[in-house]
Image (tube, rainbow, N blue to C red; front, side, top):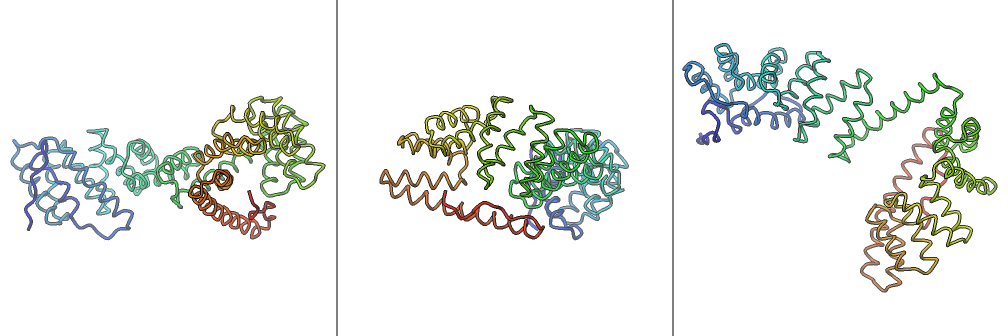
Length: 425
């Protein structure tokens, strides 16, 4: 057998080395739990401070436990640790390691007192506390589990273990209808796993449930309010039922002409309507929106787009620049300002706008397309090729996504999206 390395400085010769703890065999478990083991066991060794060397029996049992683990015999190590705890109940090293071993043997009831004792003795053992929360969940102690999982979660850094604790906490919060807290945990997990399919679904489900709950509460408490009509309008617009959506926006504004956001949302619907009569009514809504809230960046930008369509380039540029003052990181504002600058033959300034748009959102294929057009005029073939490649890449992704959404709408009996995914930017 390969000689085991000496324990790290500061640890007793009777403490468990990370290597030995990683090697012992455990009963068959899921891949997720197996990963959890790998990330859980090494830090148990850090529980050791100094073994009670004056107690020969304790020292002997600790040494035997370590040897059994080195031999991959946790079944024999557990009785040795239990003997230590019987002799020295305050031995945090023994209790922490024993709790971990019992947990992964699925002896959840047996692991509970040792895990709790370790956490009570040293409250900053966040991984031990997380494991304690999982153990309590297995034992149906939901309140205690929620307390320990919530305390440990913000301090965990190892991705698989953090995910294990986070998902357990989400399940606990969901069971008690604490959807806000569950959604906050999902958001934390997504910050480091932005493409995790399961987390994205959880986020979608939770925020959909939150929206549904808010909508129901609003309907029960204020069914005839301006806000209720605004909610109805937004839902109808989301399902492409534009006519009743417009009617609900108008009713909401009749009840409360100062309703935040309503003028802009109605203006958007009118602007994109195929009915030219309705299109002509959009400008008044955006102007009304700015009268309610002079910092309504979306309304300001849409006024610029209307001015551009009417050939009023100076006004359009002023509106676009004002929108950028309100939100310098709005990609749409950069694009609209760039388009107007191109029409005004101010190519250098337009280039700056498009380059900034690409920096803000590298997936914006329209910005890549327009930047390629400018580079072509400047006889920069290498840059043109690069921008066209980016344009084609992200355009295909956008078209594919649009097809998926259209298929979902058709399958659910909704109208397909009225936009032309294949149109040129």
